[in-house]
Amino acid sequence: MKKLLSTVAATTVFFAAACGSEEPEPAPPAQDGENSVDLNSAPAKTQWDSVSGIQAPVDSADGPESTEPVPHQYAHTPQGAVQAAILGQVWMATADDQTWPDVSSTMTAPGAGRDQWAQGRSLMSVNGTIDNAPEFKGFHISDYDENNAQVVLATEYPDVGLTAYPVQLTWQGDWKLVLPTLDTAPDLEEIDSLEGFVEFSA
Image 1 (spheres, rainbow, N blue to C red):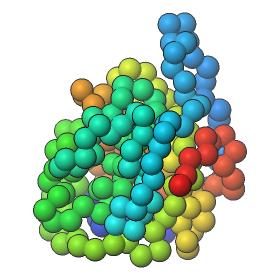
Image 2: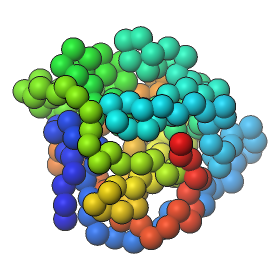
Image 3: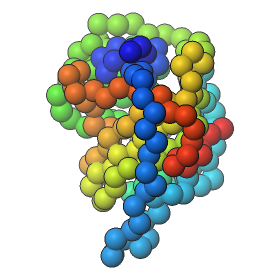
Image 4: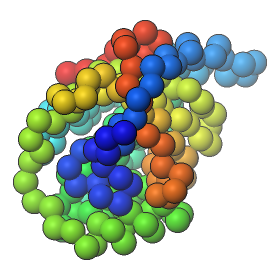
């Protein structure tokens, strides 16, 4: 197992790597009353740009509507959740010493995981860009309703390869990351292909 980043040490890259090869199942069809929910389309009209060396979808039809002081105000859609999942991971990993308190309060949901991350982040100093940055390749929405979403991000790391990592979100007037505690944080899992994922990259 190779740790790239724990929930607390969110200063270099985002995740934790582990061996594995399970492919995601296709997203379930919409249930009655959910015909307007599309789990298999990427955010539309997306603009990608570098955030401290990481290419990220900084704008789309599903948000964020505001970037001050950090990205927020996403559409209450699966695609808004995808945007929040990616940008939340990027900003947690790259926010400098002045910005990380805004990341914590604006982009993440209250809870023990956020408390642990904030405590650990306060002990570090981050300033600069990420070398050998990972590249987002796609996503798979493994769970979704109007209150919660789980977005599995497919990301390629220069020294690891193609990987998958689940990001949990909750709707609290905006999509916010639900950070796991250190003892419940999932590992990043190696995958063989983007089969089952919606391709989404710069």
